[in-house]
Image (cartoon, rainbow, N blue to C red; front, side, top):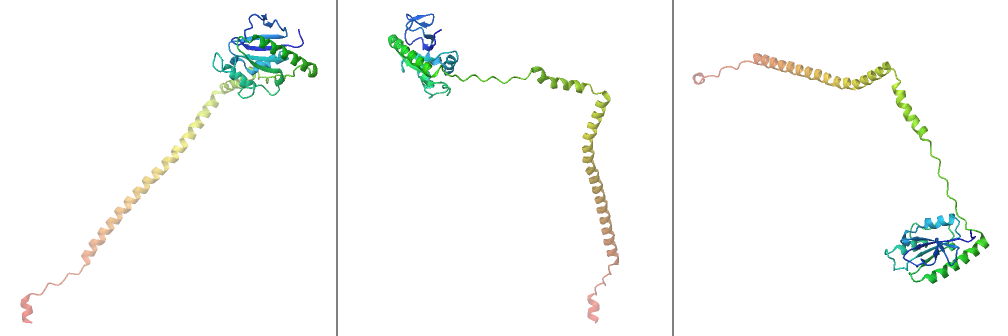
Length: 238
């Protein structure tokens, strides 16, 4: 395997490479491997990062000319992602010098081959000066808890409840019933007291009325009688 490997992610409607490929490798430069897509808009920054992790020294992204996309704006979308103007973009750990974008029409095969050769030479020099690209390793996922341990407490709880003796269950039910009856008894007390108060007030009112009648009768008996009025004959004699 060559020390310098470049992966090309290209739209199949862009440059025509049908006569220049041999088992997905560019005949004019065996360092260039080609992966074709129906549209460059399907290419994601994660694919560029994956190519770097797989050992690529550089990545070429090639789409149709800007404004001439068969699917309207696919090339524009990936171009903005590579430039960091549209999410998702490349991670900060990716060396932008090792990623280029080419926007070419179908007849521009010669230009693509020329650009690809220059890019292979450029990343080869970077490898010689700085070493291969450094890619941030993927962080390991946290270990999941065993399913058996998580389900164990929930499974044991019903067994513990079922293991209670019948007498204990009966006592708990009785205590619960007494707790519910206590407020009802307290609510009934005020109503009985109210009946007593109402009855005593009615009795007192009747006694007061009777006393009033007796006083009125006694007052009429004790009232002095008025003397009869003198007639007109007695007045003349006087």
